[in-house]
Image (cartoon, rainbow, N blue to C red; front, side):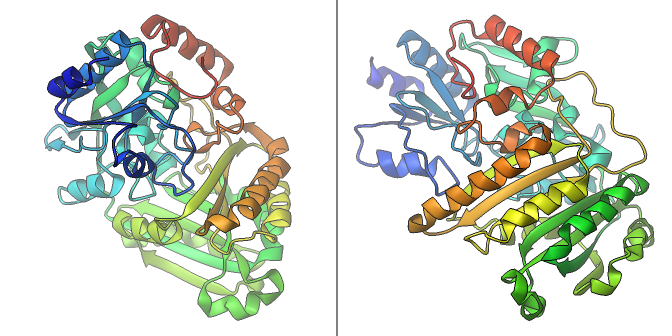
Length: 461
């Protein structure tokens, strides 16, 4: 193994486990402070596409497996694999726009916030991640449950083309007409994808003239009853509305009224993406008809919330330098049953920063997914996030999170690969896809990476 040759051929930085700064760099590869105890042998911080290809060829010639880091925002630190060559794409952040064609060409590490800021300045939009610091790389590969998801669709459906380095170190371009099976896979294959995408070509949308949010806070004990009503109106709302029920700490202004539930509350939040503020308010008016309105502790109506503001709100609830456990499930079960079960465990959360939510599919008709790797959906998506700061609180939060997920798993029809703990339960990877699409992904993996060079998800060899 000639590390001197690798360093000479790669534009960027090459770090080995023998280097004094290795552990600091290894930990920085994961945004979550709950850093896995998995140790790559070499970390290549690629400065360009050619460096990615050179690193892949080096790994193949030296019998090493390859792990990939787009931006390190994966909750379970999938980029950290023992004895691997880790290729870090974090320096690849270029964005170019074709305004006439409404097309963007982006590198993998540009964040949702930075990409959105470029687009807003030009009157354009994209279903970027709700979390501002999430890079577009893994977000797109996982499918992308982004802003205005019900109307704009999973973000991966807007991928028009992708440049990638394959397991043999070659560069390929995938479009509908060229290497179409790879484009099919890029649209949702997640961490099991059998290549390294270095560039995405994305179809853009006109920016909404108004994005407006209304929030309604209720006592936590009404979560199940409230969910039953919200689930009943979800399909009556236009698909341009994001509709979510949150279980979280109550805002300071009503905390005193939530003492019987340990300072926790339930809230209904709806965001409309519309052509005017008046149209947005009209979309959200149905929420004022809640039969539990007399119990509402706080109402925040028709707040202007451009995506930049939505990013600020999300950043406040997902602070950096914290420890996270996150898991998801798609469900078609009655929302009242799901949130009644969630409430039963959420009341005992050891951290006031933890959040559970149920986000609904809106629009009169369920969306029909086109033929692509992304293939799991349902009436609602449940997300459980344990969030805490101190290592000494690990055991309590891990125990709580696992119990919460176990209590809800019976309602699952599948999972979202981008936010599921496929380390604790590798079977969740397969259950994030339809049976036929999983089989197709396995066949494509055998075609493009027959020797298993790329680590992929934890269900693979």
